[in-house]
Amino acid sequence: MQVTSMQFKARAGQKLADQRLQHNLKKLSTKFVSARAEAITAIDFEATRAALKERRNRALENLDVWIEQFEAEATRRGVTVLFAETAREAAQLVADIARRHEVRKVIKTKSMVSEEMQLNTVLAQMGVQSIETDLGEYILQINNNEPPSHIIAPVVHKDKDEIADLFARTHEKPRLTDIPDMTREAREVLRPHFLSADMGVTGGNFLVAETGSVVLVTNEGNEGMCTVMPRVHVAVTGIEKILPTLEDLATAMRLLPRSATGQATSNYFSMLTGPRGAEDQDGPEHMYVVLVDGGRTGLIGGEFQEMLRCIRCGACMNHCPVYQKVGGHAYGWVYPGPMGSVLTPSYVGIDKALDLPQAVTLCGECNSVCPVGIPLSDLLRKLREKQAERRLRPWRERAALLAWGWLVLHPTAYALLTKLGVRVLERLGGSGRMIRKLPFARGWTDGRDMPAPVGRTFRELYAARHTHLDANVPTRKPT
Image (cartoon, rainbow, N blue to C red):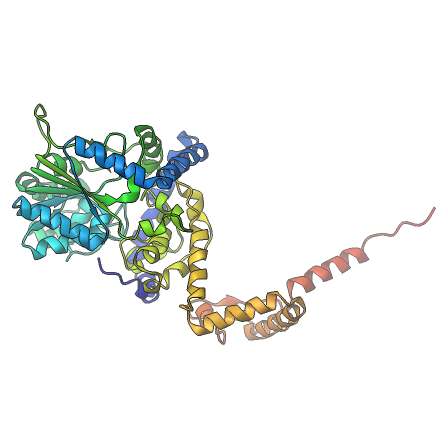
C-alpha cells in the first residue's frame, strides 16, 4: 500500500463533505463503542489492562530472547521461520515460497502486515492469483483493490446498498439486499477458491514463544479454510507480536475481542503449531512463518517503544472523534486513527506523514480505552516536538509557536496582549457576536463561525466578580 499520508488535510476535507460516508461512520459509535462499553463490565478492566501491559512490556524488553525461543520451538515442530528486515523483503520471501511450491492460487485472510508488504501486487506480478477471503477484504478487492479503512472492519465506510450494487455488477447475478442472502452469495463465490488454492496466507494476532505457535482470531472462520485446505500455509506478522507464554496469551484474549468488537470471545480461535503430522487428518504439508521488522526494531529502547505493545484491536480509532468523521482512507497508509498517527511516522518516516501527529484533538479518549495502556496522546505530542525540532512544520506555524512561547514567559506582556486581543475579537463579532472571518487564522473560521468573547479577559472577569462579592459582604460592628 503506497504511503499517501501527506495528503491527509485535503482528503479529510473531502471525507467531511461526503454525507454518505458520514452516515456510514455512525456505525462506529452505535456498534463498536457501545458494544465495548458493555463487554468490559464483565471483567476488572483496569486490573486486566495493567496485567497485559506488564506482560507485553516483558516481551518487548527481551524481544530477541523470545524470538529465538519461538524460532527454536516452531522449527522443532516442522515450521520454517524466516526473517525480513523490510516489508518489501517479506513480500519477496513469500513470492519465493510460492515459486518453490509451484503455487498458482493463494487464498488470504485479513492481514495488515500483508498490506504493508503490498503482497497482492507482488503475487500478481509473478502471475499468482490472490483471493481475499475475509468478507470485508473481499468486497474491497472486487472494488478495484480498494484499501481497507479500518483494521478490524475494513469496509465500515460502505453501506449495504453500495455492496449490493457491487455484488450484482461483479457476480452478474440479481441484486440482493438481505444481508444473509448477500453473505451466502459471497460464500458461494469463495468456496471454489478454498477448494482449489495451493497456498494460504494469514497474519498472526500473536506468536507464543514457549510452544512455537501462531494464533489467529477471526469471526468468519475463513482462517480455518486458509490454513487447513491448501498444501502450503504462510503466516506473516510483525516481530512485536511475540508473547512469552500461553498464560500471557490467555490474558491478551480477555481484552482483544472485548476491545475490538465488544465480544467476550471471538467466534473462531486458532492456535497453529506446525504443519500436518503423520496422524493428523488435515493441515498443510508445509508451514512457514515470516517475521517482519519493517521499522519495528527502530522503536526498541526509544521513547516510542510503548507503541509496540499495540495488539491491533482498533479501539483507539473507534473512539477517536477525528477518525469518526474522516474514516481510515484519509490517513493514507495501512494504519489509521491515533495508532496510525504514531505508527506511520515511526515506520515510514516523520517527513512522509507531517499532518498525522496533528490529526487528533488530544482529548485522551484513545488512552482511556487502549487495552495495553499506550499513552497515545503523549506519543503524538512527542512527534509534534520532533517535527518542530527538525523544522518540518510551516514557518508561520513555527513563528507563531515561538511568539507564544515568548509571551507565556513574560506575564506582563501576555496580560497586555490578551486584554487587547479580546477587545478586538469582540468588535469583530459585531452585533451578532459571531466571528465569521478571522485574519491570520482562517483555519478557525473557514468551516465554522466562532463565538466572539465578551471583551474582557478571564482575569478581569474574575477580579470584577470578587470586587462585587467583597462589596456585598456585611461588615461586623465592633463589640
